[in-house]
Length: 186
Image 1: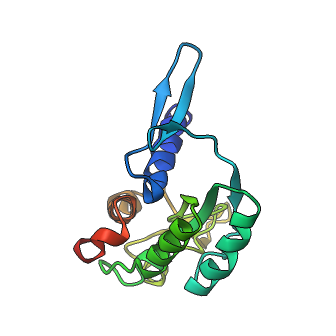
Image 2: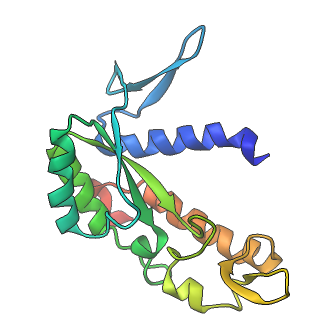
């Protein structure tokens, strides 16, 4: 089921992320043989670059990295954003770093595509907020073949489906609609 939804999820994430530098909502224009990504009313070919996992954590990194990328004639940057960055305290969202990256990308005429590190990245929970990682009662861990708890959030244990899913979806929804213009209403 995940594999059948994957193209839709990728398209939604891509379109949502490209909104950060678009004057209208990006879309995929269907044609007989396929589709064309359209951004600001024009066909858009991604000439992309990707940041390393921990390269988007500070404003200083944005000010240093994005001009270098723009000089390479890249038009789109895949940038990691971690749940721990956005919701360091449960229910309290901090978009200041992401807002800075979006502003710096606009200055360089770059589009950003957000690579969301929610509960897992490469199978481990190193980018989940500390408050999630500390609360092993609400956010249960995967169990090893030997029966030992691990540091990895479990998606299979029932309490996690009830507790974690709404949290991850809530923060992702807030992230998807985040722009510097509406920062105070998030």
